[in-house]
Image (tube, rainbow, N blue to C red):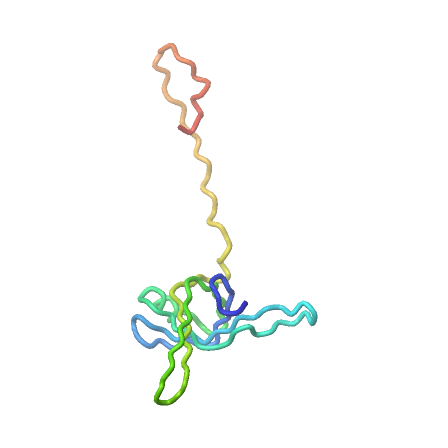
Amino acid sequence: MGFHTGAFAKVWGVTPISNTCTKLRISVSRKNKETDEFEDDFSGFVLAVGTAAAARASKLREGDRIKLGDVDVSTKYDRDSKVSYTNFKLFSFEDADSAGRSAPRAQARTRKPAEDDGGDYDDTDRDLPF
C-alpha cells in the first residue's frame, strides 16, 4: 500500500531544516508473495512537520525503522514551469521496534485488610476492588 498511516518505513537519511521541519528519506517495502522478495512500495523524501515531529525526526539515524502515524500528501502545479510537485508530510510516528508492544501490565493491587471495628457486617466482599 505504500505511504500510509500504519506503514513501517526504513530511514535512509535525516536533514534537519528548522525547529518545525525535518526532511527524511524513507522507504516502505512489501513482500512479493510469488518471489518471496521485498520490493519498494514507496521511496522518497518526507517532511516531518510540527515541533514535536521535527524534533523526534532529527534524532533518527540511518537504518532506523519507524511506524508512520498521521500523514498527508499534497500536489501543487506551477503554471509557469509546467511542473507538478508532490509533497509528503509526516505529522507523527513511533519507533517500529516498540510499535505494537503494549506497556507492561500494572501489578494487581491487593487491598490491605481493614481493621475490624467490631461492627456487625458481612465481610465477604472485603477484597472487591470497589
